[in-house]
Image (cartoon, rainbow, N blue to C red; front, side, top):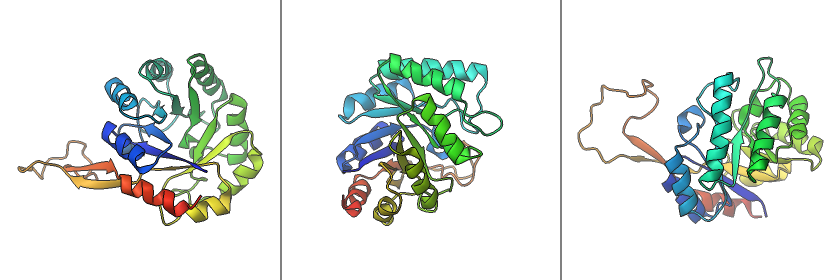
Length: 248
């Protein structure tokens, strides 16, 4: 059996993911920015509402993964809070300006997570590194449980050759979880062609909000590609469909 992790952007999405058969939740806010740390109440309520493990993304902002000293202090505090509110683990990634993995700070975060008795996933900051083989060894040295990666491409299916090489290089020293664009149409071939340990998907669907009056000229976020009145939620049927298509 492969573990299926679902990226959930809300409490309701986490509930739907569990209904669909997910084995773990990656809980995020601001999915349009690639995910940032959710609120304390969101973490707490999610952990109360689902029975499967919840891993919380620790990312203080969108953008790159080179963090200031102040941002790093925030991230460390978030680890403690995530555990306090019921999280089973955290998801984060830290890079140096030269595109290498920040081993010093990542190791510090791993040690902090271990002191709190929670797990640690190095997320897709990995895909922004300068050399994937070098980065893989660096992450292994820090003691992370797993790496979430698309194999250095926008979609994991396109990065499947790199994912296969990563699995071979890791030789069981760390779990490799493929994520980005994973769905029922490609999950089986992705598993067979790469040998990855786990799969990460969102299974989102877009629903229209309940507002009747709509001021179409205003964009709260300022980005025209983000629908102002639509809401994205995890679709339990999409998760179940991907699991069925994987044919474990």
